[in-house]
Image (cartoon, rainbow, N blue to C red; front, side):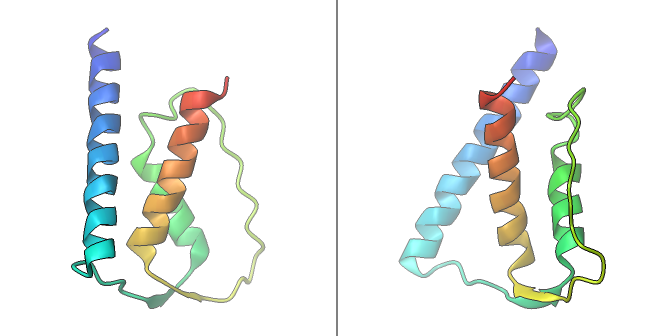
Length: 93
């Protein structure tokens, strides 16, 4: 039960942080930091941050080899991916 409380507290923290980031972005207080990055590293980082949440679930990614670098805000895209994966964990068996 303690593990479930901890996991839900982490999820709540992510939701609050997302809301704060959206508010900052809309008000102009948060600037995107676009850099050329390998997409597979951003995906791996998002999955790594959800290790505990994904315990016991298999995640399959299909990123083509030799994919060129992409000009993105890596932490922003990582957060988007983490949110999508978190929602999938929450609402699917």
